[in-house]
Length: 85
Image 1 (cartoon, rainbow, N blue to C red):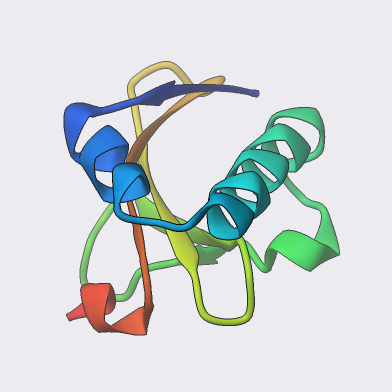
Image 2: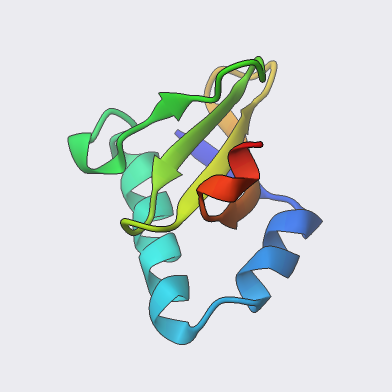
């Protein structure tokens, strides 16, 4: 699996502390190696076709947008559950 970060994601990452940034990078690396890894808790966001989340920490979710290429996801945002709304 491949990922491509968006500007919005890069902006959101800059607001995180160093420990959370490392968790985000680790989660994305795991996603690329094994998208079905149970620790990621991959979920489709209800009411938002093509948008999925993976878990970086208990509080942080990484938002992914499916693309026309089944092997590529755009990494569009990172934040807490409030971003679901």
